[in-house]
Image 1 (cartoon, helix red, strand yellow):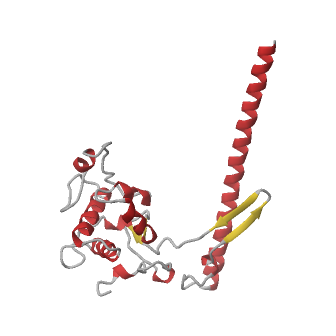
Image 2 (cartoon, one colour):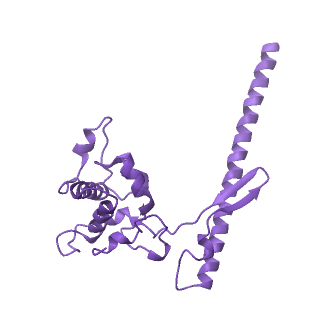
Image 3 (cartoon, rainbow, N blue to C red):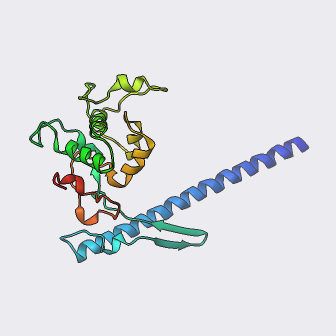
Length: 217
């Protein structure tokens, strides 16, 4: 009887803990949705006030928004998804720069150069990014496909599809932790291959996110 009572008590405690965790997760989800709705309201208000522009002087761009809760607080930050280099834009093979180099590739190479990378390494990483995001298994000049990644320990394959998250950069041939951290403020992943940088919402880090887009700078 004592063994049975002990087992029932333990099971009840486990069920209670599981229920508490589930309720906490559900509450956190609703808090996150509330913050998202608040952000949408701010964006809508700024769009109505200034329909022809988006810039860092608007209400949505204010840092340090906090929402006090009974048992904590929510901190919310809104960033423009176009104030960065879209990594998926590099999947272009057409001659857009007039010298055989697609314009997005040229921009990414210049960004790497501005961050201190030598020309050869910048070209290699740009080529590896192009091979990672394109749909074929044919390596570009200085690029990397499956045979390069399978030689790693453990081995893996090139994605051969658009990036889903910026963190995939860490898997690129030639990438290291230091360069990855330097790139983070300037790159993003969007669901298309467009390269459209909003210079009005580029944050303070130097060089500004729009510098690589202009060859003369």
